[in-house]
Amino acid sequence: MQELEELLLSWMVRQRWYAGKGRVPLLRRIGGFRLQDPAGEVDVDVHLMLDESGQSPTIYQVPLTYRSARLAGADHALVATVEPNSQGRHAVRYVYDAPHDPVFANALLQLMLVEGTTTAGESAVSNESSSGMASGMAPESGVAGGHRVSTAILGHVTASHVLKGEQSNTSIILELADAFGVPTNPLICKLFRVLHHGDNPDVVVQSALAAAGSTHVPRSVGYVVGEWPDTSAPDGMARGHLACAQEFFPDVEDAWRVALAAVAADEDFSEQARSLGQTTAEVHATLAHAMTTVTATDEDVAALSRSMRARHASAVSEVPALAAYDSMVRASIERVSSAKWPALQRIHGDYHLGQVLEVPHRGWVLVDFEGEPLRPLTERTHPDLALRDVAGMLRSFDYAAGSWEQMHPGRSVREWADRARTAFLEGYAKESGRDPRDDAVLLDALELDKALYEVVYEARNRPTWLTIPTTAIDRLFAGRRSDLRP
Image 1 (cartoon, rainbow, N blue to C red):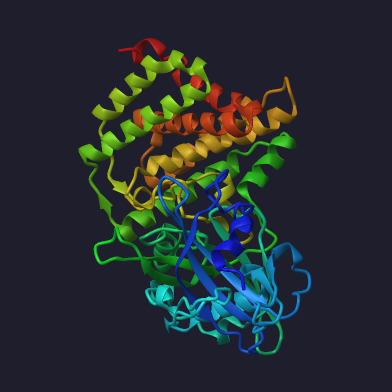
Image 2: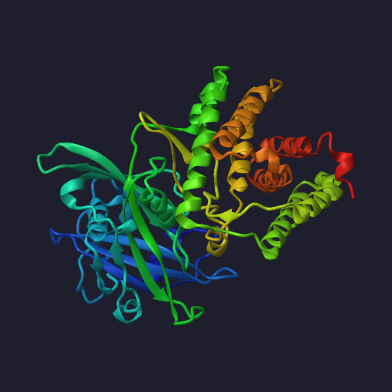
């Protein structure tokens, strides 16, 4: 039977969650565990694979199911067909990307609902026993906030499917039914593909909000934590979240689609933007209370300054014309260094219209508190300026308008974006008691930092969209060029 590493090589490079685009993985299994199929027909193994092909190693979570017959409707998730080995000890086996297999989805949910541990198991695709490598892996299940949710309340899984567009995680929708077969509210289970040492903010922050009584986040159901060997850790072991589950809202639209529809229909979005500002401020206040705040240090100030310099340098390398803003960026950084900073707190970290759902009878619901996936986990879990989320949403209103303008050359909806931005800030100010524009130096700097990031992204992926962030940068400095120059 093929070695696991060989089996996964060509498959992993085609997955959206594989971060080493353009590289051939150099894989080594460092841990894993086995889940049980109650029917005993499907083997379910979760593998932790270390990829050492890049400058820094990356750990991927790769769950696989092994079947003696094909899984109907799952050819798109077939990883490999493993033929019998030379000794004829194994029959043909069909290996699937486990999130697409309902047996795995059900087993993972059960693991979350029954507090305890599961033992490491041998790899089903290795000729050699991997129990030694897997022995360092001790996943455990629990419920965020310490509140158990029983299967009697949730029901049982009747069907599952994977959402499209996965990046650093894979989202599985679990359809449920009660003991009488009546459908109940579905769940979404997030399987983290790229693993990091430390608590995932999507689990910790969202759970803290739900535990504090906030209705502006999905209800948390459970999570899975694991440990794996890591020579850089003090005790030689790393620990982090592997998966989490929460309530799912079917047939609802995110704020991005709602906003795009408003732009297309030439409808004012001010009322929705104002309520979104109020919701954002309410969530920030709840987080500040539930997870405390800290005073900004000189290092925090220096970190933002470094980020702005690095973002500007990257943007100039992609769009040399932005070098014209060098002196103004330096002046903005100087103002950030001398500004009075508010307390730092936990925030969303990757806030935009696509991260907010419009849920009937509930209002705006914020999701995906993981932060920018490409940022190191230590940065994403560090208290930050709540204004960063505000700046992110302001940029998102610009993008809603800009994306419409891309499809309608020569036409402008700048006024729509300006009204939405103003209403969002007004709503935030009304709820929080402080207008973000009173911290204009910091807010402008954070919006500039985000726009510079967007320049790099668009230059590399959608060059025709470059005008959206470059116009924003020009607008940030417009009318203030003289007083921004040193």
